[in-house]
Image 1: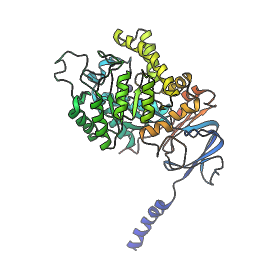
Image 2: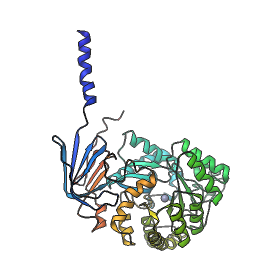
Image 3: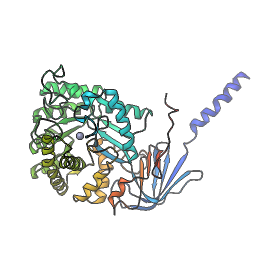
Image 4: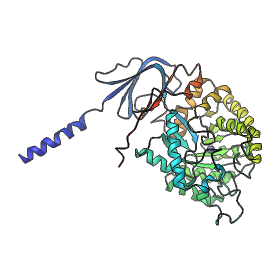
Amino acid sequence: MLRSAAFSLLLPASLLAQQPAPVTAIKAGALIDGAGGAPVQNAVILVQGERITAAGANVAVPRGATVIDLSAFTVLPGLIDAHVHLAGRTIGDGDWQHANLTNSPAQLALLGAAHALQTLEAGFTTVRVVGSAHMGDLALRNAINAGWLPGPRIVGAGISFGIRGGHCDETDGFWPGALHHEGGIEDGVANGADAVRDAVRYMVKYGADVIKICATGGVLSPTDSAGSQQYTEEEMRVIVETARMLDRRVAAHAHGTAGIKAAVRAGVTSIEHGSILDDEAVRLMKEHGTYLVPTLLAGYTVDSMARAGALPPAVAAKAMAIAPRMQQSFRLALAGGVRIALGTDAGVMRHGTNAREFELMVRYGMPPMQAIQAGTLVGATLLGREADVGSLVPGKYADIVAVRGDPLKDITLLQHVDFVMKGGSVVKQNGQLVGRSAAGVP
Ligand SMILES: [Zn+2]
């Protein structure tokens, strides 16, 4: 009797384990697949568990499936932003210039959680975070993956690093001794072959998915010139070689031409910003298969802030000089056939406004379908996540967004995402965030 009671208790669980997960069928008015295929009218996407099991015009809705009717919408893959900074103060918010030193790591990580939700709500279901003080992005990634918090999938770099006094040096601009230590790897500083090799290993040790370096000066850093090369080509070769051994890719912040070329020759996977390209730089990028992440929105934002007097004079001068060059370089890279992935530098502009980048890409000459690919499958491929995200095909995560109307006719529609699904769970419907309980959090 006892035996059979135990058996009957076990039976339902074993049966449950064999039962297929319930099916959700999404009826799409139009489907844009993210891979550049022509839009499919009246398509159906089937979702089971976290993944897509079927997608297309001739897919039947199985009996008993939960139907989500998006027949008045265009359905696309979850959007991908390859350049954001979540766990930090947004430019213009409080004492943003020194925030990484005046805010506790916990404070910045909590702010990051709010930024992550803003990003997801805007339809960006995957982001690459290219640098966070105290590795806040990695903490955030882990919390989101564990289901503690809603947010996009994160590919994180931990701390971005560069030369002493360079764009990545958090201690730049202070008098010697003010911080009672000279900048080290925790502050984004690594000089010379041995230190940069160790820096890559340090980031990977603490969980970085990707390595982010500063090849040249930057706009928002207080003392350097944006165009000047900072890492030597030799240092960058060591970084790329070490990262490759550990199965990681390297993203290089680079504005000036010499630094861009050196980074490309050293073998980095992507040039971030790429503000001052010339024909040779474009040719080199094409030859090496290097991606450009143009961050046009960052250029646009700092230029607007500079003109409004909202930036310190030295930074404002750099911003106004670099922004028009970014547009020219984007056109040059586009004409030269360089692979371009969408990235915004969110944190420079407000999180959740990322999709304005699509509008700028189209304004500066990119066809709308190519812009959509840049923000979906091309981004996924840059991140090395194309097996899981970036297009609406069976086997990938059901990361799905929908907008009312045709984004190929009006690219600004992507700034108003009505529906968001991440990994098969609805995050937003009818433009409203779907309530979420923390009951399942251990
Ligand atoms: Zn950035």
